[in-house]
Length: 105
Image (cartoon, rainbow, N blue to C red):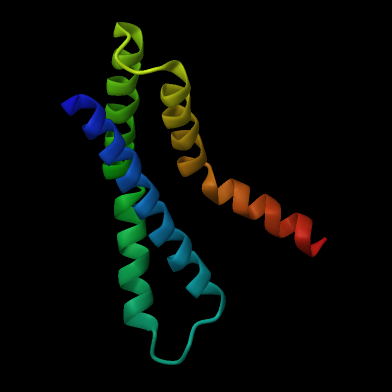
């Protein structure tokens, strides 16, 4: 039960971190005057949270969920959702770029 809560917590944390990175990317388009230090801090935070920290958390989450799926502690649908969410999280930049190019062109 604790492992399931941990996996859910990691998935929620990854979603929160991803939302913050999307907000940081949205501010890059229209930089108000005097936002240089704030933008630099958000860019650093995005690089930190989507770099090694997020990769490590995602590997742990997928490993824990995979082990729980193999032992029958959670159903396969929830496990597939975690794995699919991880792919979306790390592929979000490419997904947004594709949507933007489709919308503009």
